[in-house]
Length: 366
Image (cartoon, rainbow, N blue to C red; front, side):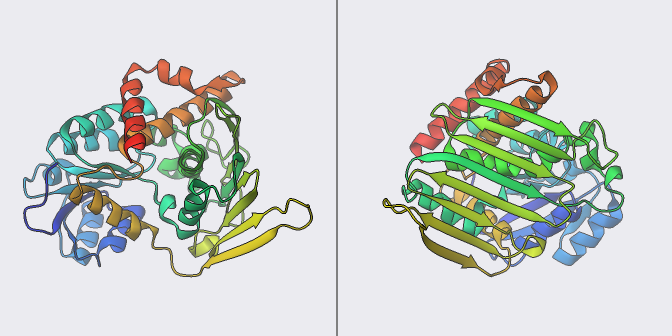
């Protein structure tokens, strides 16, 4: 796996939009890396962000990734553009961090996951929710068996949009691949898989309740069920007028409830309830995480560590392909109005099979 020549990772950032700016701000203090180039077709936007970082602005992303001195590339573009850019960056020998959901469907991103595996390059997808301390603590407790055998998971996640939302790329399926399911809902799907493993059945109802964005959805109601019977329930919404995030994980010994993501979603908290065999009120333990949201900085450290330690990071390209296979099954369910088998979706995409196998092998070896 290629290593930086200078001891400081030299980074090209593709996409100088709102989230590209957030990503850049989160990693700028990190002494282990330096953003050297910012690429965006909006030259003024690229220049403004580049000047704040002491980097060089360019209009064409190819000018950034083809530079031999670059060690890694951040891809912060809408999903329709990300797979092509990632594939070119990997082909040029660069490690890649790409913002979620990476592509519009699993088929689009499978070649990138396969190439990263073949070239022994780090390909990480920006599912930064795994790095929120309340959710990381919940994952640790689930893995330690603190709440026993898993029974079900529930997630509510949403915001109320903003004026002009219907004109943004997120509301156009040709750019985004879908609506709220691929915007915020996909974070919950990733967390469900991280906490409970793979799912075999999917059913979803989509609606366009308020925003004039059809055929994109502004609400998704979804159910997933795994081979062991673990069930996950999701409501993701663009009509949640007060920004909300909550994730509950229930086991046969107790439950966990994570709320808040910092910023407008409120402070992070994890509440653990352990039931008493004799019944009555459960024992309760509360973990508060009042600090600012530093999940992007934590995620960046994992990306750099993965390169240095010659390993794959959390939410690798192969992992993200499996998450999008679940999303594909949910969209197929909504279209067909019936339960869809997730393995059937994967079987219909032969290029996903090897990606899923690579992810499974990585999980076993982690």
